[in-house]
Image (cartoon, rainbow, N blue to C red):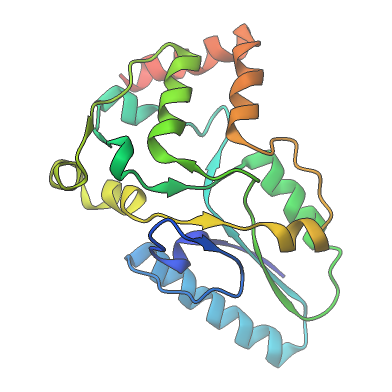
Length: 206
């Protein structure tokens, strides 16, 4: 079995680096549900004697999975000096990781299913906006952002952690197509047709 969980099960690490041996401290309802699902699946795998791979995925992105609504709504971001660290994985790379995990035949194993380069949240949005020609949402002090966004939006902005994917690279031996979102954006800048399609969907959101 393969379960795509969330890196949110770790909770907030204050920007610290986490590997799969780090304690889980889920703080929001979404992460609590995923942590409970991990426990239930572990119990099932032990009782049935089957292999289980848990892929703790962070922000999943692709051309059709970009945070365009935040640009459309001009929802504020945190200023650079107080910003949170975020992690990402392209949807195609996550699919590759799922396929690689199917080759595992024994035991229970957890992997941080992320790319190689954590980024501050604001930097990700800034580079994405530059690539698509969209204005960056306003950046405000952390407490002001918390007061202005919805609880769900805040849950994605508040927690700060940097994920270590060393175990994934050693054991699943997958070569990521997009080792960083910056590589993805660099390729996107060279592809006018893809940018036009993304901007067309942005116009629909607005």
